[in-house]
Image 1 (cartoon, rainbow, N blue to C red):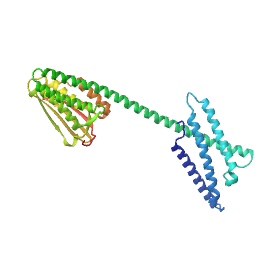
Image 2: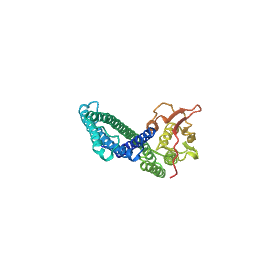
Image 3: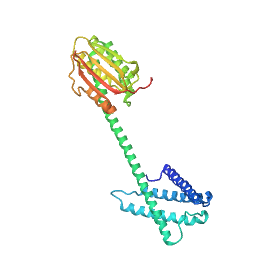
Length: 354
């Protein structure tokens, strides 16, 4: 706060203007109660001139306070500067009233005489000290707001950097797995390998188009998931039976970008790929109050439910924590009848259709 903002200037003018109106009304009421002549033209000009003088003195003091505030480590020099500013403002106030008295008249002027002049300067001195105190409150409040904004920006940048790092780990993860699958297929079935490449291209295009966006609609996320499922169905054939049950009212709910793919990939890798018989993988999504619930289920042999299982699942946990904090949850459960369920609970935020 090196300079006095216009908002504070307007506040100072409004404050002293209101003070002039209040003092004028009190003097008029006091005179009327004592039966003295009541003259608005006599009292109001004096109070307005007094307010104008105080506006100048107040802005002067606020400027010096912003320029040289008292600090814990550095207070002696600012104290001398502010003491000079207060004395100058008090003397200015007294001198200005004396100079302007012949033109405005009235009783709101300091009486003549050295003793009374000193008394007037001291009274103005105390008011100026209060103004300096208010100036320090404004300085410290602005510093606090600045620190809060800086801390918020820093936290956002750190969170974004962490999310970018997690995404950078995740994208090569599914990319290398897909390329390995295509490499295995290309010598046995060129058409199937070509289909897988088309699906991989769609998945990469989705990833690159929204590389700086951490969230997208569930509908778009499902489209990207279809690309991944297309690759795996070519590779695994009838062994992968994929279904989905998505509520119509949550299609445009906002979800983390590429969240479902690693969860489904986890089910494919640890349930479908480990068996010769057909294995079902299902994705569900529905609304429950103000929450969005998503599940990825399989009927495989069951995956040990331990925290941080697999790179994709570990990254998904970290991304959810970065984006939603304690408002999210991710649970992996081995089902009694066999198979695994991964459930994600998020705050429900509905978007619009593209």
